[in-house]
Image (cartoon, rainbow, N blue to C red):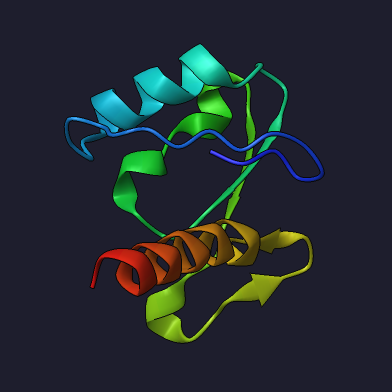
Length: 89
């Protein structure tokens, strides 16, 4: 999870089911916050839980729509993996 202009939280999750991911979102993100995700179906319904949710559909070639994108989060993982492979490869 990444707050734009703020904190980054990375931790292992047991699985990517809707109940697991949304439980973690509710634990770490204040209701009323804007959440930008990819098209994964586990994020469906966040609007009903008090979040402003927008997603981009990577399968359709959509990576940015207005403020909605996951680029900064994907950049974090790319940097982490590059450091890992460069150090431990």
